[in-house]
Length: 328
Image (tube, rainbow, N blue to C red; front, side, top):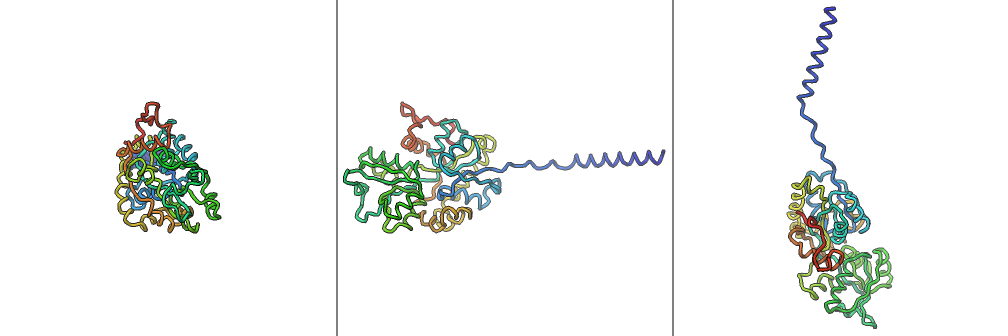
């Protein structure tokens, strides 16, 4: 009995020591959830500062980022409305549409300022009016189908520009039509502009849409076209991360603007499947790298959205965007 009692005592002591040691161990580190970034391979310049911040280790929380590619604006809006994501790259009107419908999204920064070019194969054309047909109307093929350039050029018309009519096309179809000479005049965003210039003999840039607008309405030849948005949940739970993301993009942008090769290099390798890196580099001649906090360009964003997204404005002309649309 004594030997058995001693053995039991030893077991109890050992068990107690083990439990005590376990209790003294540090608690497991909190598992930080992987953040999701919704983007598109068809956009280049507006996301370069983001990828530079990630590549240069400015944001360790994004080291294992989950990247998802949206296919079109409907796909982007659906992910925003469902709250499926933490960070989104997209067109400002897409963000605004989703926010007006209750999506928990906040605009962080504007990173796309000059995107659209009027292209023509007419060697003698110098101005937009030179593209007018016998009916006095400028007929332009447009891609993508939801291009905000349509609304911008209609505003140019309202302010004294020539009458314009648009035929909408998917990018691949427009490329085919232009290559076989079925389309002479078109409105296209970068980097597709650079793709078309390489593939269609005689095609050239007649004017930047943003410059046409500036001549008609004033301005510096830029418009707040695209940017990054973040989920309201991420803003509430990790505001310091959101602030560091914005600052990192602002810090990275000047160096990228000075070095086009470095700017192209920060895009993930898989982006080459969408747009050839050499084409992306050429597109930077017309699509500058620039980051501005959304909070610093509220009025410019509201004015732009009033033009391209009339539902963002009430009968009295006041913006209907939710109060928290701009971060912070």
